[in-house]
Length: 120
Image (cartoon, rainbow, N blue to C red):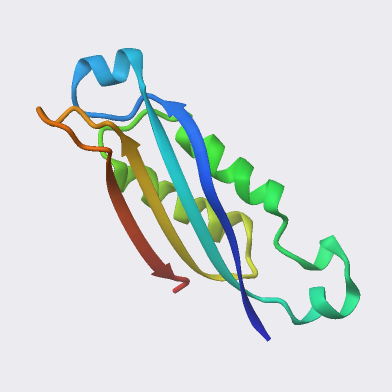
């Protein structure tokens, strides 16, 4: 039985961006992540040891968000690779990273990158 584990609206203050002021003062980012996995054993056993732990998934995202990068595509790719490396039961990751109020010279609530990747 396949299932999707989702964390929505994770907020981080981080230092991603191309411009020097973004890397110095930082900005707010929002992350949504969903992972596909087989939930059969977790559903049968009611044991966290047989499930994707939400806290582990959050820590993976947090650890990558703490590493400054120029592009959100880089951050997203690193998060996805960390998920595949540390959570072997995950078969697919969907990730959306949004920069809140990006410095584009006009009013913009958020700029986002969305990536979906299946395990090779």
